Length: 145
Length: 188
Image 1 (cartoon, rainbow over the protein chains, first blue to last red):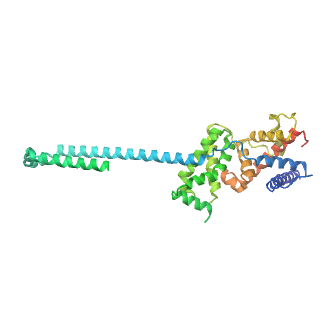
Image 2 (cartoon, each protein chain N blue to C red; image 1 turned 90 degrees about the horizontal axis):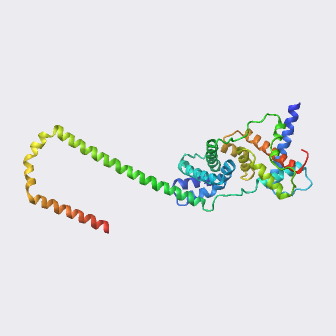
Image 3 (cartoon, one colour; image 1 turned 135 degrees about the horizontal axis):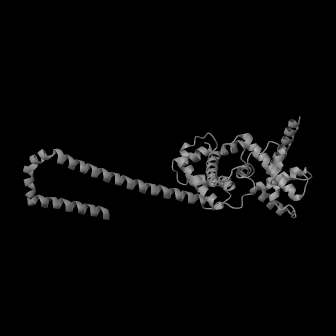
């Protein structure tokens, strides 16, 4: 019986709290009502007041700026990492070629010996120098455009 | 199309200004949850930023199973909860004895009960009493009264059962009413 009374009392109190909230939401006038209901209405009114402090007016744009800055920083980091990896791969590849030549390439070097004589031809160097200068000029021209 | 879906799809399609619109729409909700939980404006602002960074990172995981408001509220609540755990601040008071008389104890001692009872003072007193509640109760009350979130929405945000939310609401309002009556010298 006690438990039932207690439950009924809790239900009545809950109903009063909800009624006060509803009346405040609907801005109903409060006159000559139950004192407890008036207290709950006062509480509801206070709880419905906006918090004193708030986020800055430009909060949304600050967040977007931070997201963009983070994305740019991540992109730069990724690009650096990619370049580092390519450099490392080229170095490993170069070392592998060097090692392969050192271990099994003596035969090939001997076979290439006749072509080495070409390297003593000064016109070959002149040709390579012309190609190099032309490439550099193209690069510089493209960069300044 | 559902406005939540339209907004989410615009953000995921990287439409210009869409995410800023989302932030504007839900920054009030996040502020109410986080500020009520942590009660430190500087920390709350930082945590609100963190919330929206998290939302931006994981929005593709949103499956429209709940309202976007509840989903974002849940992210804000989790971030505030983690902050409180780091600071070792208890989220809620230890579970009270089921005897309802215990619900009527506690708040009044912290306030000057002998002061005069002008309306403004009563409001200040109530604000102080609300601030003195544990973080979870403050947040639940604010979501229910100020944000007008339903009990089901609050349950989704906090991950608590509907009954637990109701119990927090009931007990907090009862305590606040009694704090007010103590101040006014009204017999409960």
